[in-house]
Amino acid sequence: MGYSILEANGGQVPWHNQEQEEVYFIVQGEGQICVDNECSPIKAGQAVFMPPGKFHQLTNTGDEPMHMMYVYCPGGDVAHWRQELNGTLPPAGKDGIPPLPEGAAPQWLGVEPSPKLGA
Image (cartoon, rainbow, N blue to C red):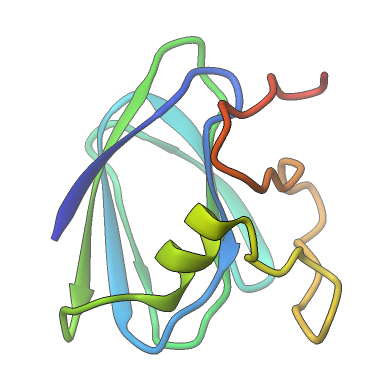
């Protein structure tokens, strides 16, 4: 279980998957959640479940930081954390990774502050 804050206007958990099931709970803010082929708005008080192996991405589309909690089951280290920190997370649509669903916010990769959406 963990707690993250995504920067306003584009902070993101980029397109990835993992072997564990996962739940995101939005504590504060608003954004877009994409799971598999679907993208939907998400806001404070809402949660989303990601089955094991499903690709997903969370983007802060609001003007304020998004606070979110996540829970993995079973717990433990998750490969995409290391990939994100090392800048080696494969981009959507390349090297066997499925493309982002239609209407998804652009994928941001890296550990520097994310660019503003549409910039």
